[in-house]
Image (cartoon, rainbow, N blue to C red; front, side):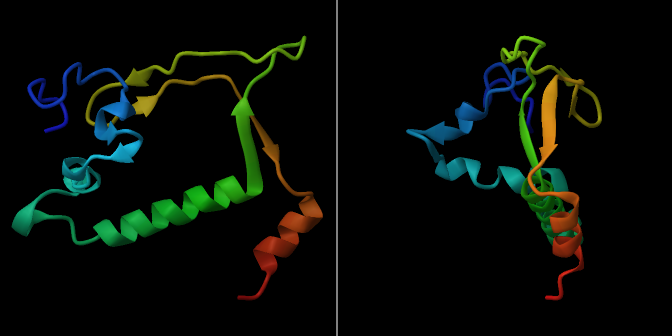
Amino acid sequence: MYHNEEVYPEPYVFKPERFLVDGILKEESKFIDSLSFGFGRRTCPGRYTADGSFWAAVVSILCAFKITKAQNEEGKVIDSEPTFSYGVTTAPYPFPCSITPRLSNRDLRGLVSAEV
């Protein structure tokens, strides 16, 4: 489905803009998030749990860390072109980036142990 060249020209090139029109998600692209969980009677029963768990993990990481482009010794930003592995799953190859805590260790411990 994802690699059909008639539907997605250059399917092996990372082009998220192919799903947008004037910066807004195309109506026919809204089903794409469910492709990996299957269709019809054989759809994955845990898809909502997986989506929720993934969302919680991403939000927690972005809350705790600032992720930016890496800088060299002179302080200039290191630009890199993303490259990905292909196969049963797709993953980015290692790339330079900077990950720094948004809060101090003390603030992070308070955030983690806070009562809800």
